[in-house]
Length: 513
Image 1 (cartoon, one colour):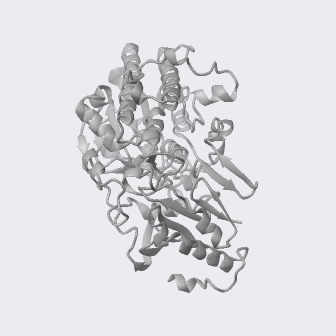
Image 2 (cartoon, helix red, strand yellow):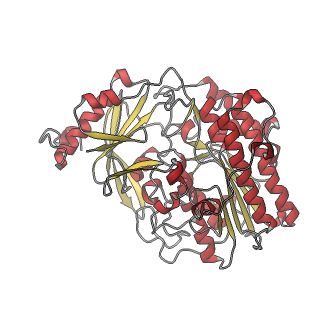
């Protein structure tokens, strides 16, 4: 199915099917010009069911998704020029030195792990845009030096370390995994029973699904078969995998280093689903469902049915993020409750908190929280004032409270049993790296501060006397790439000049209007 065969010129009305194709082809041409090549990496859209197009300035690929034994297979239909998705290696730019040496990588040097599946699942979403424009590694938006959201290796790669009871101590593996595999792996670790009506990635019945919708798979070879009594997960939001590995190796993150020394690290990282963004991948990590299936396709989108924009990073909407999770989707908290009736679970500063016995966000929703601590009460705050900013300090108070809530669960301050699952989300690593980039000393300071907070929770586990029966996992939700502040212009004027009515939401989700 060549692009020309889509009969793009049959009508100029975006309200009609062929008119839609004409409009999207027009937007694609506007985005893939040499003038925008420094900032716009890929224009992605679906011209027909189960058919997808990815276009760059120097080439394009049209590919099709085909069901094959309960899985998806992807067939290339047409390549014009260079296939922009041909390189899907997971080991590109491994190590902090290699990443620094390849800052602002050109599209021909980058790789796009799991790109075909990532693009296809995205356009399954009820709120998916008509076209997704992804930015280059160099593109700096919203005055952020650190960036993520695109398919490239550094923006997609997050760290993953598993340790403790039930985890085989395999050291560093020479491979990657995917964010969509996290919840199934943790469910298998905790001995969750298969869901009685579970479905797989194609939506068909999957008898081994541990969650209601399981797009991913359990990494069973890293599990020993022993079921821990407790699991603690630390999500270091937006933590660059190479930076964390370097801090572990240098001794600057001793608590995480100890976990890695006795456990298993995925050396190529864990790759986020498209878009490689916070809300989408927090939800994927906790459900085993891609953003296109979970109901949370990004942090912002346009709801066509309600004619309104959703922005889950706004203070008014953030604490209600979990209300957007599709009712057919099961969180890890709910799966644990299904398999272990009476189990206590905690979600500290976690967006996707459905089914948790305790949730920081539920306290806010119910109006029973006392607010954030004073900065003077925050522990593990870097003592170098030159590395701190107002946002660094603010997120430090957030993370201090997240850790306090996690420790309170372990100290059983509410009369609760010891947690079967504790999920502790920490945000400083994301905030600091956005502000100054992952290669700046402040991003490294954020890793040190976060490691110390991890140590506080581990000390609480030790005090409870159950360390030998506890598994601990450290991961991030996406990567973080150093951008070039000199490349900060967008593409709004170019799209406007096409005359195609559209709405651009969240910096690249483009909806025809």
